[in-house]
Length: 186
Image (cartoon, rainbow, N blue to C red; front, side):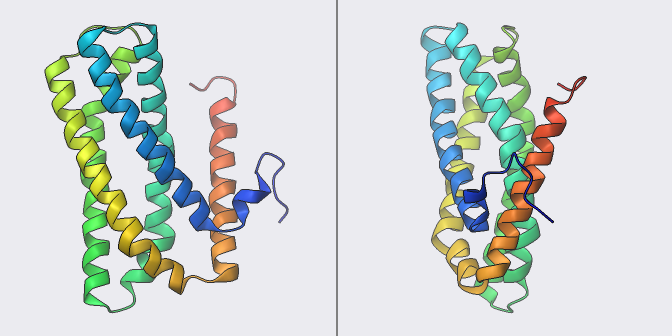
């Protein structure tokens, strides 16, 4: 199977490059979320706030969901099969985190979507509280992955396995981009 034209070959070198890049983007977007809450409190839902909210919604509704699916597919099963109690416990915690993050996002995203659409029905105090929980959990989750789980997985997934992982991840993302760009889709 050849590489589709819309896939960056550099992204295919190592699946962990894709996962690490998502963490970098997510940390940036978490900072933008905190800045958005501050902006809404001081300036309100101006055009910049609407743009920020739209970017945040897009990232956490698509990129992060793909990222979590990739971890559940490639990283966690390999580590859970090792029989190491500490690693298994960390994997179980991260899987629970994925559920909690999704639940928090389902609470947070409609309010952010309202901001992005220029609607004013959101409650700033509720939005602020939900954002603080989401930001804290996201930071803790990323820290555990980067300090413990990813190093464990990188030590066990080698060469071809990692490049196959990267190729598959990039191809699925490209297919989702094509689907999103197709006429009649939002």
